[in-house]
Length: 245
Image 1 (cartoon, rainbow, N blue to C red):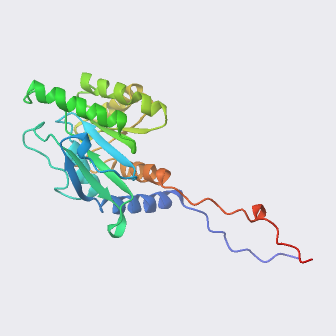
Image 2: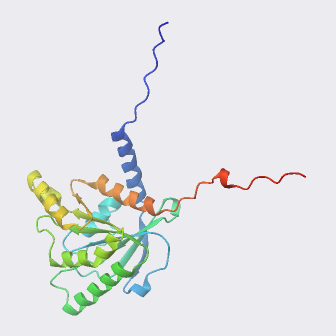
């Protein structure tokens, strides 16, 4: 007997699934709101939420990248004089006013106009934060691919290397990628991957919104990996009911 034709089974669409996840991640990042600012580590609040630190040279486009990722024009302060903003700024993330993660905007480094004493002090504050902040879950470094990683970038990589080797997530965003040709982008990406020391590398352009979804997904998945999930109940492990004599 001939079998009746079966309806085509619905095949999952990986591309659409990724688009949906990226849309959700961007919506989550849009919830970012100012939490607090601190001049010293001991002024930072104690909490259990995973923190993701954004670091980079003063002209690497860090504030612009944060504002683009969160779809907010003035969340992170972009000074007209790079290197003058010398506070740790925290932004809470979470829907409906709840918090499930915190973005940390660390001061830009390497700007020549900053006095040497201030440079040394803030380099030490940043190093202490990156080494000792217990709930630091990931680091995002901004790098202008036209100039590549500089000495201070490499020093920072050495500072976080022990934590990366222990499993901390690390991402290099090659900002201002729109200023490079496609071949130069590919070359810069290959070089940065060799220097990343276990981290990931992605091209990013705030102007062209290049790499926006990739970066948003990376941030969202990092936080989801740190959210505790309730342990499944194993009914077989429950004691048997008492027998009636």
